[in-house]
Length: 322
Image (tube, rainbow, N blue to C red; front, side, top):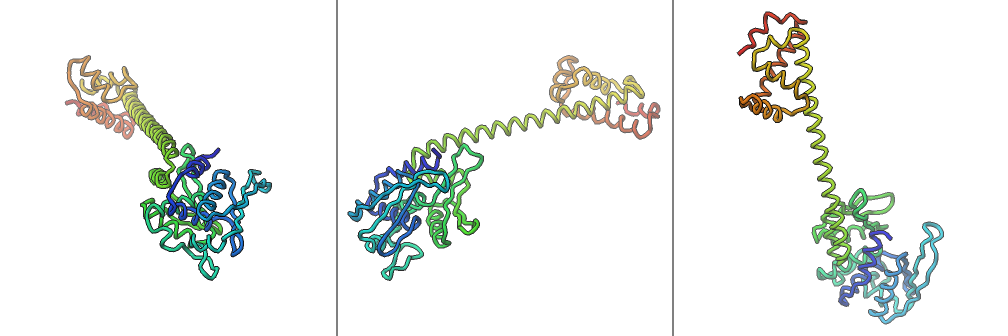
């Protein structure tokens, strides 16, 4: 069972006020199935949703719908639940602000359907039951979406979502309009808004674990990068020392430079900080990381001059003593 199904099952079991139920049913009917003046046909692959819609119609309008089950052979072979409403069709469509008095579908429901914030939330909840999908937070990306055939439906839903600062956006995908949210915190806020509280707990637990794992990975990557930087620095210093030793010998260096050269050869994998602490401890002469780095720069200068002069440095190196 998918996370989206878990969320829909949870909110299909809510007990709400009459005005909330009207707003939710209005959204579901507007965004699901087909209707006319003498029949409303709805469908869903979720049995819990089918039972909820059936109950809402019965409780609000005292209408017993016909619910049938068929197998979706063309796609995933899941059961599809059809709800057929044949009584009080005009009353239901007008009361839910789906159709006007002339039998024309309204671009958006009238203000009384979403007059208060709880009714807005209920309308969003009904739209999610009809058109919504949400990724499991364990997957590679956070994603919540609603897919509409009509642009005005997507614009209306976006307005409701953004009333609650959910930062939803609309894009055209093929011939449909997708309202989506990709921010993890906003998706968590959406789940709270539609009262899917068990799903919120699961979502937040997984999100925290993912973020902790990401932080650990970033720290490991940073540590790996620092380790590689230290190794590269050590290898470069060793090459400079080797070049000097091979061409003119380390004895030509002054005592300070010769000391750090010998310690670098003795401790080839130590960082500058570690090496400065080792030298300070073993020689009883304090030297800082900065001071050590300064001496290695002078050694590099000598090695670079050797490259330029091809070994004719014996007479000029003496000036480096200090």
